[in-house]
Image (cartoon, rainbow, N blue to C red):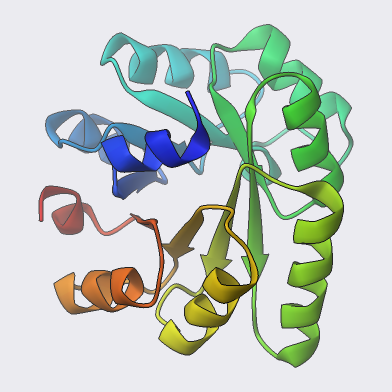
Amino acid sequence: MKAIELLETSPVIAAVKDEKGLKKCFESECQVVFVLFGSICNIGGIVDQIKAQGKTAIVHVDLIAGLNAKEVAVDFVKQNTRADGIISTKPLLVKRALELGLFGIQRTFIIDSMAMNTTKKQIDTFHPDLVEIMPGVMPKVLKEIREYTDIPIIAGGLISDKKDIMAAFSAGADAISTTKEELWFA
């Protein structure tokens, strides 16, 4: 499956930060789940629960306790879980995911023009499957990245209502990710 097809099946992505959210996302129509919690001891079980629900599991490797910022962290996820992909703010981890046949999502925080330029360089250098722009409530920034690349874009962070979702889509986002559970059912 291509990255854009993944987002077409689930334009709203459930980003889960705890067991309660994990259970709640199973009730939603969200087909893609971003795992923002866990440790090396339980990440395999968390992913198994998601896969048992027929959903796509993407692990945010930067947030899994016990993993480090080295490519071996991605190897661990590939060898010890059934995850479909990873998210990271570290381009080399995203690159490693792509090498291993996992979805590689580059999460980036655009806080100023230097961050914007760095993001563009990372897109050109590493060619991630998807780019998650944080915070996702900046239509002007989303539009600029959309005009710069055809890599699918996910808007995430600070999305609090349907208006934010619609603004992100209008600015060119292909999907949104949110920990706000009520938006998983919108």
